[in-house]
Image (cartoon, rainbow, N blue to C red; front, side):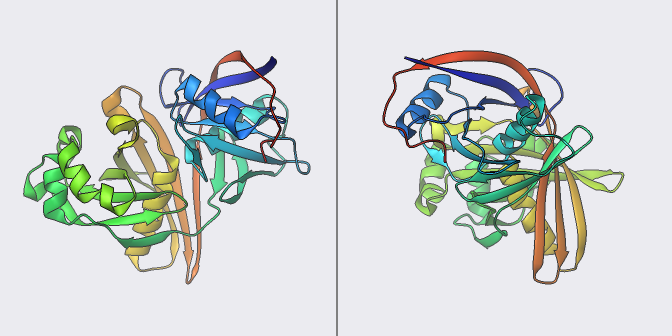
Length: 299
């Protein structure tokens, strides 16, 4: 049996037991894919990260697993891993860091107590399988509470983005499993992101959001960086102008796990740069044992 040290973090927060929980195995070299998947299932967190041997100074391969499958990219695992590598002295905060995910390189920079990454792919926006009446039925809301047309947007993981008209509508929204199976499941993308623009804070537009996924029987997520990046791309694209746009996104409030995500989009003609930033706090360390198997590493 082999010992594997891991660390538990709460991400997109600076307070323990808020934000989105994450497990990171900082030295996962030698682990097989089956072992990683089994460990992620055992820990049963939304995501678990496995860090391989550095490819070069400040360049680490990572693999991200949910309890059921591997993901090409996810936001809170990227931010949490960046914070942990700095905490363990595996990278310096004044040095460049690149996390090589399945989707491609995620370039990270540190600023004060934030870790910020640039998405590896540009945003892709297309029509959602939902129209406003279907969104109203899906969420159990009144017709006037769904604003505009839902869209499907992705910076590596796709989400149906649905704008709501008030915080009260956001609080009351509860997806119907029947309507979900009729309108969301056929799209092949079983995640929705609900959002409300609530005001401004300094130069940032302030948004409240909730994310639901059919995975795990209709699970709600307290902080979703990949959804925030998709939303940033959609909102920047909807503006129709060049410039730098910034958002402060609050999620997880309704779950009792408040989170804070900073998103930005730098739009210059056809050149788009989308970034996601957040804090994280280490809340524990543990050890798991696994039987050795044929290595396919964390690369």
